[in-house]
Length: 323
Image (tube, rainbow, N blue to C red):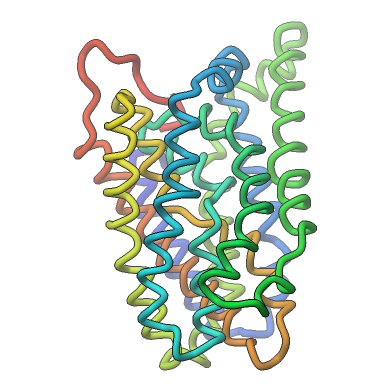
């Protein structure tokens, strides 16, 4: 499965499109399965990260500085420029700005690890990234969208993500690692967990795509401009993140991680916010879903391309074992 994982992920996405398109009645069931699949996926990922590496991630101030500069200084400027092309439609503008301003904190850790990036450092920076999102996105939304956007953002989805998708899987992974040193059954869990990485990722991709595909099928024509913005955003954001990291002197494995952080957005967290908007802005949630689907395909490409473009030198330590 590891050898053919990209093809398996594409198969999961295709299956999600097929099931979501043919059986839209299943969308709520598939939507409810996203967080469980993602929680298992992150638990397996965290389990592969030694505790010593997590502590190391907290101490790498250059890496954290690159994440902050990229996601909260450079990316907002890029979002402002790109949203000028969709500002005529307020709902589309809100959806594009909301999702692109929020850096991902969940499956970016997984994809970065698959590409040999230092995902333990991304994990260590997660609380800071979530806190800065809660504080700064309302301000950026005010600048990009206008005064009405200040009323749209609530802290609950960010807090729920931190608890359900980061804190609980992380505590379980740390507990498994500690008990694995004393009990054989927990040691076996730690050794065999990585075998379930590909199935968990396939389940996550299938659930996300299958639960939202019918929305795009109904409103596809209205989302073309937003889709073009998202497609342009991916290479520009990745290029910017890479060069910011290079300016700070980060090694190749860290550059891979910050490149993924610059590209991936927090769509699964901001989607509940978009769904809660007034009816006149209902298209905003479809815009967020559009970004999710485009980004998932981009992640599968980046997993293969980024290690080829950002090569580690012989003297650098190897990347995360997750890949």
